[in-house]
Amino acid sequence: MTDTALLARIAEALERLTPATPTTADWLAAPAYVWNGSARAIAAIEAPPLGLLRGIDQQKQAVAGNVARLAHGQAAHDMLLWGARGMGKSALLRAAVKAAQEHGGQVALVQVTADALGSLPQLFGLLAAHPRNFLVFIDDLGFAEGDSEGPRRLRSWLDGGVEARPGNVRLAVTSNRRAIVPRHSAEQDDPINPRDVVDDSLALADRFGLSLGFHVCSQDDYLAMLRGYAGEYGLTLDEAEALEWSKRRGARSGRVAWHFITELAGRAGRGLG
Image 1 (tube, rainbow, N blue to C red):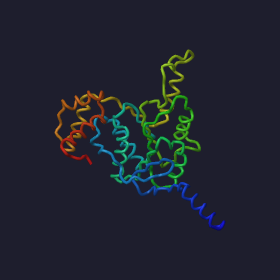
Image 2: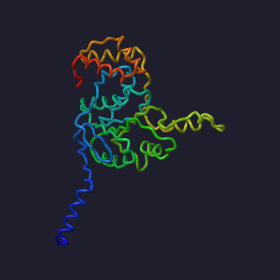
Image 3: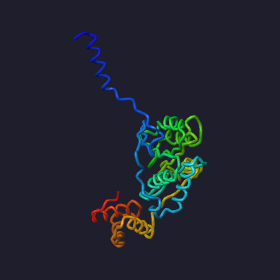
Image 4: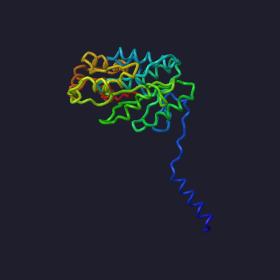
């Protein structure tokens, strides 16, 4: 084998081992995208109709209205949805974007994976170049104890500066904590000013123009969710069994209600697609 042929074979082998350059999605074509450092288009947003989301009426009205404003190029807020697990925070965001699109709004949902937060400035640069509005969605955000860089960058994205999100982009974050960053009982024991650390941890949440709490639902709200789902899908609801289902799981929430509806549909040989 000649030296030239050997070099050609080595070059071909190296090319096969080198990861392909990520392709950029068509930011005007899809209703939603996933960003993990590069973009992947999603053909359809999976979300329940807004009318099926029960027990969160005030939150639903605020989020849907804000997303509709963004979709039509009007002034809109960055959003923080915080509180109890399973109460429909992420489902509400997806449903609001889907509803806005169905009413002619020019908006797309971009969900950012947990390992891609550092590449958000790159994403912002791509989105700024397109005549469309985008809701960038960070689900279940939380920062580890001692992480000062993450909160600092989030403040920068919200408040301005060279990394700030462009005018056609708004951020939507869900978190189990209002403050996003961890808080500990020791913070209350500051002998100088016990409010300083607490106020600083809440300052990050204050950067969001719209901050909405989601709380554990009452029994009445839980049953209202179930009645809505059962009516939508033509299922027979046994409320006593539904309450027993929630007791066995130790919680009442939209997620627990949906799991019970899934159980009912499965027993009836029905799908929920």
